[in-house]
Image (cartoon, rainbow, N blue to C red):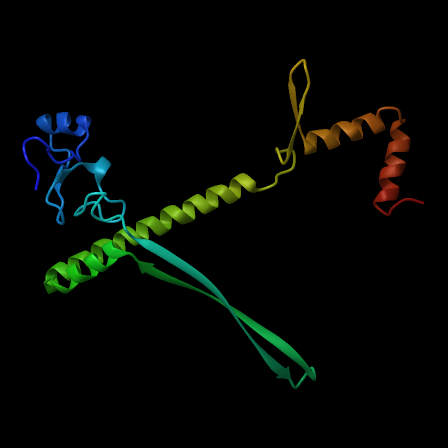
Length: 196
């Protein structure tokens, strides 16, 4: 029980406390500990109801399993191995058990509202995750003339960076610079399989 000498730690930052005097910034009361908290001290999982301290003991266990079985293919007259992968997720932690008990005490309307709320949140998070995956894959896409791998050479005069594509272009230019155009075309045609 907090007393006057030891007040409970504040879960609202100074900025949100000051802004709350002029406008409603969403300072909430934690369902579990009944202390006020702002968005900066809200739980990452259920920030509308719990502060970060009351809903943080959660664990996600991810297990990947590989199932394999041997089948006999009558048409090919040989044995083949069929493999299947499965990923299982399990949520644990004391705060997860607390949230489970709370679900049992909810009315049908509250339960329906919570289900739809989390369905929308889940959809939003999946879209965000997929957009990030797409963005990362676009960054990794190899394009002709684009930066692929950078080689950095440090010397006492400075640092020089050159991409692999630029390096290959420079090597080709150095090789072809001493040749006549006809000789270069003849070598190119020979490499392409059209030479004599």
